[in-house]
Length: 110
Image 1 (cartoon, rainbow, N blue to C red):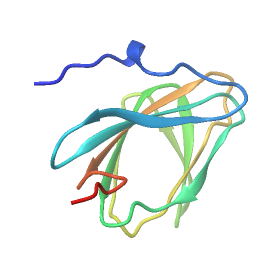
Image 2 (image 1 turned 60 degrees about the vertical axis):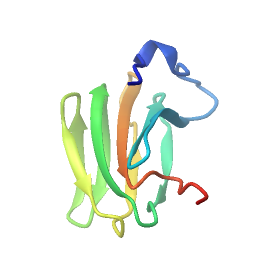
Image 3 (image 1 turned 90 degrees about the horizontal axis):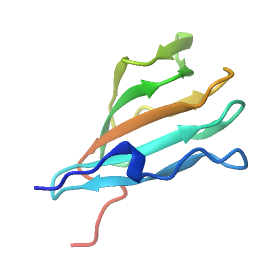
């Protein structure tokens, strides 16, 4: 068993977004993403990993094929491995997201 807490992760950085491992398992992992106001995560996919993204705090914008969608605290979205993650913080508060990936991303060496 592994236990971690959000307060153990890197806090907001006004100079750059935070995207780092939070908890690793053999079949999946969780990454924490923190976006200060005005920050954008570069658009990207996750190889063979499916992604479930949970908004812990703040309000962000997900850019989808159907246009921008607000993504607020308590929201959960699923993106298949082929779908591009496009997210930005246009608000006045920080945004914390948890990215649940399976299989783990980035891939680990065999």
